[in-house]
Image (tube, rainbow, N blue to C red; front, side):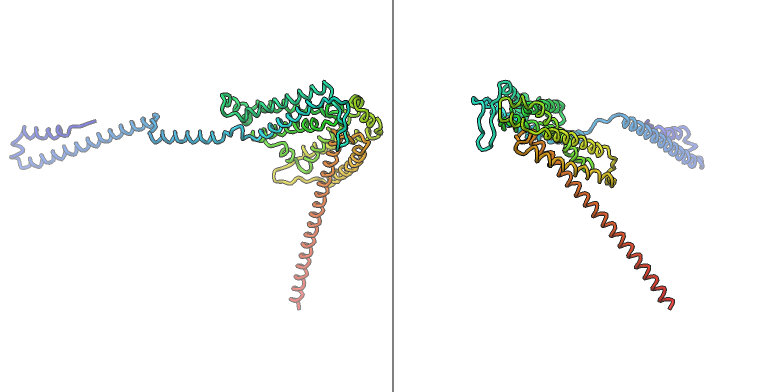
Length: 442
C-alpha cells in the first residue's frame, strides 16, 4: 500500500495561495500556518506508520504461507542427498559378500570330494573273485551284488550332483546366471535351506542302506572307502546346514545345545549315540543271516555269538537312551534366569551321579564283551563305532559330574571356613571388650 506524501504537502500550499493576506498581514497567521504544518506532518507520519505496519503484516502472512508450502530443495541439499545415497549403496555392496566367501562352500567341497571317492570305490566294488583277503588288515573283501553296486553308484552320483551344482553357483562370477545364483544362495535364502534339508534326508537314507549289515559296506564286507565316505557325506551335509543357520544370523546347533544348563549337552549326545546304536544292533540281530550269505566266515561268527550279548547290549542301549532323554528333558525345562546361576538340589545331583556311575559300568562291560574277537561288534561297522562312542560319552559325562561334585565340596568347605573365621573374630571382639571393661573397673 503506497501513499503520496506530496499530495499532503500540496494541500498546505493551496491553502496558502487562497488566503495570502491572512498569512502575511495577520500577526497570528504565522503561528496558525506553523501549527497547520505540524499537523500535516504528524498526520503523514501516522499514515506512513500504519501503511508500514500493514505491509509488514502482509509480508509476514505471505512468508508464513510460503513456509507452509513445500520448499524446493537447494543445490546443497540435493548434493547431500546424492552423497548419502551413494554411501548407502556402497555400504550395501560391501555387506553383499560373494558366494565364494560363504562358509557353506567348505561343506560343498567336502561333499563333492567324498562323493568322488565313493563313486570310484563303487565302480571297483564288484570284484571278480568271490572272496579276497585284505592284506595287513585281516579282513575279507566281499564283492558287491549288482543291485547294491547300482545303488552305491546312484548315491555317489546324486550327492556329487548336488555338490557340483552348489559349487558352480558359488564360483560363477562371469555368466549371465550369476544374478540367479546370488538370489538362490544368498544368506537366509529358503532355496538353499530346502536344498540342504533334501540332501540331508537323502544322505541319511543312503547311510542306513550302505552301512547296514545287508548293505554294500556293512560289517565284515571290507568296503571301507564306501563306508567312511558315506558317513562323511551325511555329516558334511548337516554341518553345511548349520553354517547356513549361522550365516543367516541364527545360533549354530552346538551353541544351541551348549546353552542348556549343567550337563544337558552331554546327555543329548549320549541320547543320539545310544539311540543310533540301538537301531544298529537290532538291524544286525534281525538281518545278519541275509547279510552274511556270501561270506561263510561272517556267518559263522554271528552264529557263535552268545545270546546274552544280544540281550545285554539291546537292553543297555534301550535303558541308556530312555535315561538320557529324561535328563535332557529335565535340563531343557529347567527354569533359568539371565545372570542367575541355576542350582541343582542335592538329591537330584546325587541321583544323576549314581545313574552315570551305573551306566559307566554297563557300557564298559558291553564294549569289552562285544568288541573283543568273537563278539557281535568285533567287525568294523556301525555297532563297533557306536558302542565305543556311547562308552566314551558316558565316561566323559561322569567325569564332568565328578568335577562339579568336587567343586561343590570345595565351595562348601570354603563357606564353612569363612563362617568359622567370622565366628572366631566375633569371639575375639567380645573378649577384647570384656577385658577392656575389666581393666576399666580396676
